[in-house]
Length: 260
Image (cartoon, rainbow, N blue to C red; front, top):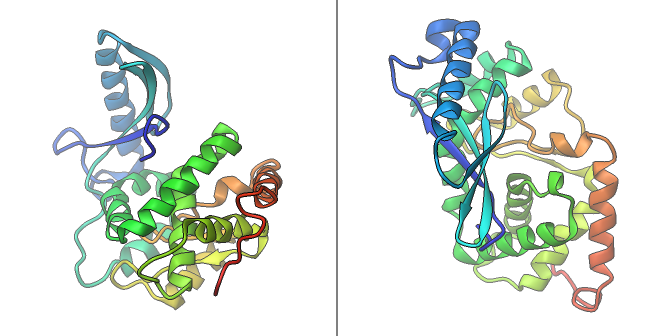
């Protein structure tokens, strides 16, 4: 997190019998129960001091809470254990998710949060420091809708891995490397074999079946999710590229060389 700038995603795992997995009760019953839970949380929060309800939908509740001198934006995402602990292979689960609609895949998506968090948490401190710098850049130069952390985290990690995972790095070189990629996102196609049973073939199958187009960065925890989907909306790719190009021309970065 970046001090004084980060918002919060709060994933709430709801136990049985209040919310049962999609595989047990089906997507329609799951959605009805999820809406009821979100409504209950919303009703409870209305009575909490220093809290302002902003909006809710079928996946989450968004509110602001006053802490110290600032308002913090919080998304509460209720879910349950839709991701069984397949130690040997998650392949069947992802193939199953390919055969459901995008809305149902989104219902599954929140349940992968622990795997997603672990993927980033396991990276060395110097990589996390670079990630924070990239997030800080985003908070200064990108509109709110493009400040989403996870795509920027994964792009940063990908570039560190592409450079053969150096045990130390120059933040200026690292930032320049990330910004250079943001100027040519139409060439980006990235995925991992992080979850057990996920390999090159499965990633390529997912990209083909879901008709994904670049930029593609598959969530290592849930490869049916292209975390760069928002960059396809409106003129977001152009906005990102323009902000990155302006920063690359600043005194801080214009003379920096990125070594392969």
